[in-house]
Amino acid sequence: MTDQRLQRVRDRVRAFPDFPVPGVLFRDISPLLKDPAAFRTLIDLLEDHLRASFPKIDFIAGLDSRGFLIGPPLAQRLGIGFVPIRKKGKLPGPTESVSYTLEYGK
Image 1 (cartoon, rainbow, N blue to C red):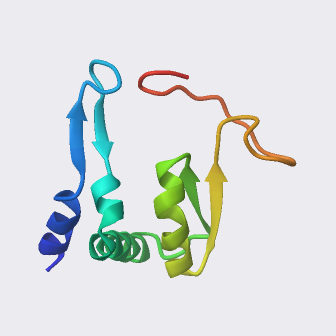
Image 2 (cartoon, helix red, strand yellow; image 1 turned 180 degrees about the vertical axis):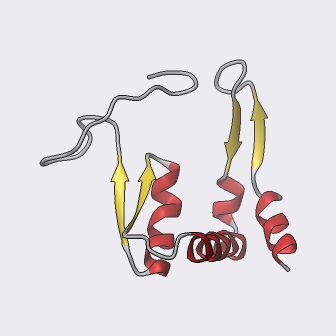
């Protein structure tokens, strides 16, 4: 059953090699977001995994921007809060800051 559910999600994620720069494999989740049943399946699978592997979670943190699409419904399902993680200067009020690098930028 899980294999079929996982395949339903995988079938709706497209891969674009060397985008936006050579050596990067970009995964496009747009088809997954367009399919409510597949998106619900993704949230179901993530919920099952997190409940089984990490019984005590306080928050879901989501990285800008895909994490903002998946994190809130997952946090709601788990009954916990969601913390958005954004680039410096993009959130008002007091924030925490950490430097990091990406595959193809900073």
